[in-house]
Length: 508
Image (tube, rainbow, N blue to C red; front, top):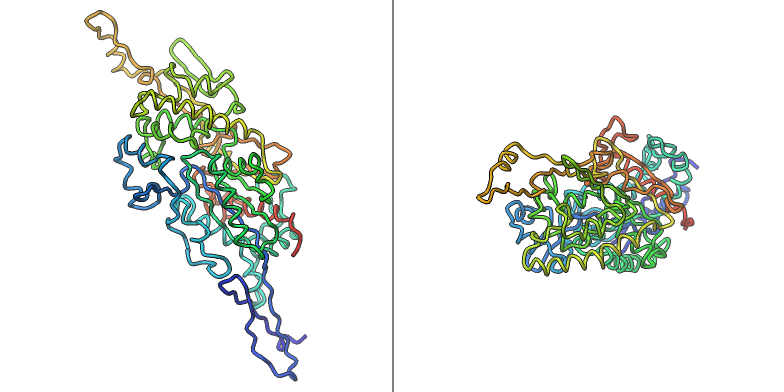
């Protein structure tokens, strides 16, 4: 066929997700061939689930937790009482009005990014990452553009073919056939924002309803009546609970987990005792007085505590003449519900209001929501599970924590001062001990020891250099060590895992 008598035509999409072609009629004697380029039509929805503090929240009056001047301006000078009032799981709901990166994209091929829930994700953590994730999963236009240019371009997925990240198993490497098969489908990215203060079991129930709605919205366009879940941190626990404990597996084609605290993390204990670190700490609370009243009433963050399976001895107490390692067996009894020892998780005096009543509520919460959720989830995974985690010494993490006796000179001098009755001044152990992180490899929040990497249901694993909050950052932390210097290994692994998962779906 003579190239001069051939023309290529792109599909033109309408607002209903349908497409047509615009062809200029030619005279019959010219023997002209109009080739209509067929795009992928069938849809496999991808739902992103943020981590703790990763969804915007509001109450009936205004924004509570959102990346905006109005919301974040409330926090640095807020009292403990105000924080407890505003960050209450009973009065807060998801706020989907947040900022969206490139909001106007895909308005025809799919519903708008706003309608797909992107405004519920905390913009600072996910704004640009979601945009790149959507682009990489729907870059089939490059294949179409190649018909109109001499120099052929490769898509990102084509560039991944045969590429091995680090020392991962060879079977995880992408093949040309797998990449080609993935281009037979469209992947609209949705976001399931949830109230991270409430129990993850409650969020899992809402996830089930959300998945049902997404599947109904694409009725007639679905390649398979299932979705793919991509999770960050605590979002992985929400997804697993829905999948494995609520019979949700039948609606899920596969799950990609990023930096999931599978077995819990001592970081959750550290937050309760001394507050959060860095800029996030300035917002949510940088000491126990500000943060403990919030966390004690919030099942979600408490469900990040180390489980029994995490193991013993992650909390160490070192004094001048004694050493102790806890838990011996049961972290709930020995640490989380301990009311007497100074190194207990929860300080009743900091709970505000009627502290005895607040302690009773906290105790019930640990027994009936936290313990049950954590232990019931142990070892359960969707049969198509892929996960990446941070394993770098450059991101020191809390494999264990140590209360180390460190009495300042001025305090030692004060101890020598005698009261009228002749007894020395008594000092709180919290004043004479410093909580020290192990500084072991991880992602800065979740240590390597909190990640289970072996299970018949875990199909692929990547250990990489990644920061916990920025796990889905677009650019690599160290470009010189990245396989693709313009893309983080974690995001590359995520895209590749989606491609592996869709191999279960037959060609339309």
